Length: 382
Image 1 (cartoon, rainbow, N blue to C red):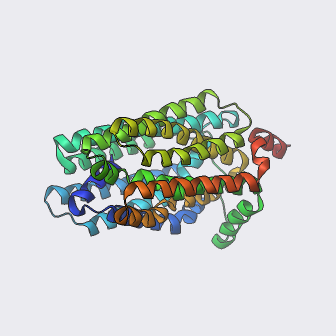
Image 2: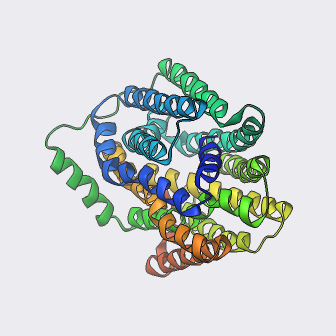
Image 3: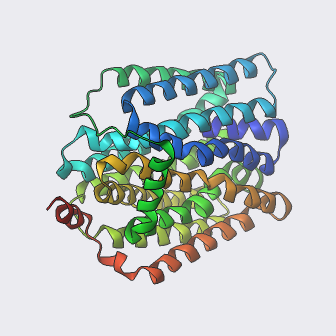
C-alpha cells in the first residue's frame, strides 16, 4: 500500500520519474549503511523486541506523512525523511525478521516456514496494491496512509504474543570482530557468495523496473491509480502462487538450480514488460514475473538459512539484505533514463543487466546447479 500511495503522491506533486528514483535512493541509504548493524543486533539481542521497535517506528512515520497530506503541507523533502526513517527500520529489523523463521520451527521445516512467510508477504502484495488503488480513489492518499498505520498497529500487537522455540546463541565480544567474522564467512564460502550475487542481479537491475511502474502506468499506458493497483495486484497474485509452489515442493533438494533458472527468467520478463502496450498484457507479464520472483526469493533465502550456522545467521542475512538495499542505486540511473529517453527503455536496460549477472554466476560457479543445502547441513552437524 505504501509503495502505491507514495508513488502516486510523488507523481501528483512532481510528474517526475526521477524523483521516484531519488526518494527510493534515500530509503536505501540506511539499508546500505546500517544493515550490518542490524545483523549484529539480530545476533546479540532479542529478535522479537527488535522487530516490534521497528514496526512502531514505521507506523509513526506513516502517521506523520498521512497528517501532512491531510493538511496539504506535504512536500518531497518530507517523503525523503520518511524514506530514511523507514529504511533505517528495515535495516535494523529485517535480519532479525528473517532469522526468526529458523528460531520458530524445527530444522527440517525451515524451507516450508520460509516459503509460508513468503506466502504471507506475497498475499499482502495482492491485497495491498489493489486496496491502495481503491482507497486513493475513494478516500484519498491521506486516508490510505492512515489505513497503513492501522496495519502497523495490528502487526505489532501480533508480535507481542510470539514465542520462539528456543533462544538463539547470543553474540558477545568486539563489534568489529563480529562484523569481520560475518563478511569473512560470506567471502570464504563460494556457495553463499554465489547466492548473494544472485540476489544482487534482480535487486540492482530487475526490481527497479517495478518501482518505475507508477510512471509506466500513468505516462505510457495512460492508466489511473486503480490501474496501477491492478498491475501490482497481478504481480502479487503471481507471487502468491509462486510461494505456494515453494511450500508444496520445499523438500526438493537441488535448490541451487531453482535459484539460477528463476532468477534468469525473472530478468527476461522485465524486458518483456517494456514491450507491453496494454494493461491486460502488462498484467499477464507481471503475474508470471511475480511467480518466478517469489520462487527465486524464497528458495534463495531458504538455501542461505540452511547453510549458515545459527550464530552467524543474523550477520550473513544482513549482508544478503545489503544486496536488496542496492535496488535504489540501480533505480537512480534507470530513472534518469526513464525521464530522458523513456520508461520502457529503462526497463529493457534493467532486465538485460540482470540477465547478464545471472549468466556470469552460472559460469563462475557451475557447481551451484547441484547444491543440496540439506546435505551440507547434515555434513556440518556430523
